[in-house]
Amino acid sequence: MVEQEEREVKPHQEETEVVNLGVNRERKEVKVRTCVSVRDELVTLLQDYQDIFAWSYQDMSGLSSNIVQYKLPLNPECSLVKQKLRRMKPEMSLKIKEEVKKQFDDGFLAVARYPEWVANIMPVPKKDGKVRMCVDYQDLN
Image 1: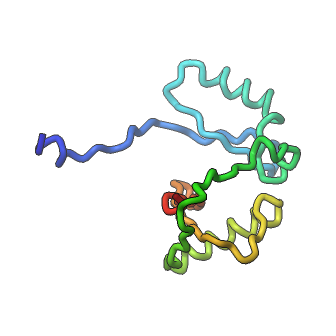
Image 2 (image 1 turned 135 degrees about the vertical axis):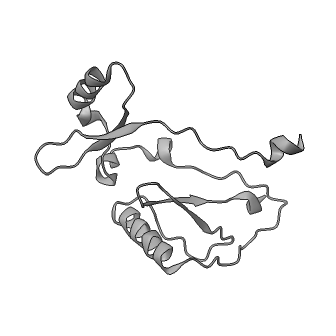
């Protein structure tokens, strides 16, 4: 058991290639596995139906807030928590500001005035250099 605990588990790596489905200078990139036997048919299918994908935040403006808005179920007996501000590296902080500005401009985020609790943003770097923003809500209840 000790040997198994010390063994490093690495994520499964698959060979992929980036395929641009856009025309001219428009970039609509998807990753496709290279070892798929029906690769050409898959790329053709994606090109035929590329209009059903959301390529930017502006493409998602028609979503109903009933579907995409999440409400946190809070236990009223629990005391509210304000997490301490987490410090970030300057380059990570710039990426977070860029992503937040983009989501504010597209109407995905709204400012909350005088919050009773605060949960920090947890930036998760992606392989392409961008940042996925997550929030850890464990302290709420």
